[in-house]
Length: 321
Image (cartoon, rainbow, N blue to C red; front, side, top):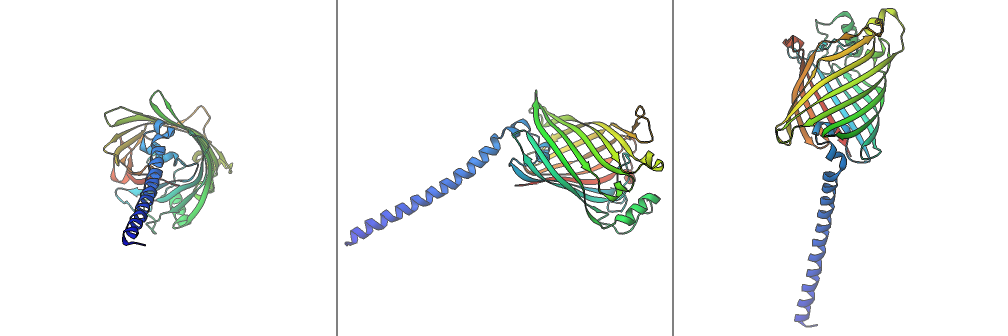
């Protein structure tokens, strides 16, 4: 075979190799583009553009792991102290600083509907092994019984549906929780069933969004002890205005005010409700990706702003798959 023939065959083989590699690269690029376009064109994300609401509802996959986390820290005065001031005055709020989370298997039944079955994780006072002097007798007992323990608790089944009603981004949800957490079962809590409506309206071109969070729930109890009746909530209702300002694709400022939070205890007739102290949360929303949203914040009572009555916290929504 002549030298010229070898040269032509080599050039032809090289051409096929280059074309094949280019085809593989094009196929990979096309696959990535298709996935990106699928996410961009998913109807749920067209209805819900608010990054926090998106992350709270889970990923766009049919099956995924949906998790939410909360670090309920101490006060500004003692950020890693073992006690957490009960700013709201609600009876189902642990007195001990804690790290908690909910992890669930999420099934996206349709573009708009989702079911999640999960459970809670909790570690009481993860950053302090000494009881604060500010603890009440009940708080000190709770600290001594739970400090450092890591518990699997409170299995929950939930359903949610995303909607956009005349420009109002809306998430309707309901859940059923069975309590196994010691701090709650010790005072007789058994189950909690609720329905929520979370709304946000985006003022186009301004970066501002505003909305309301509504929730109504009912507890059942495992202890019918008259001495516990006043500390056992039976029904809860709240309506909370919320607002956000988008700084850029990653950061936004967020606040939620809790002026209308009512609780009916077993020691009260249904016609009598206790209005809890008004509180407010202010923080920085951080959108790491579509499926990861962080919210470091502080919580305080606007009419009684004090360092020892201002809690620090961090909440996070993390979705996998």
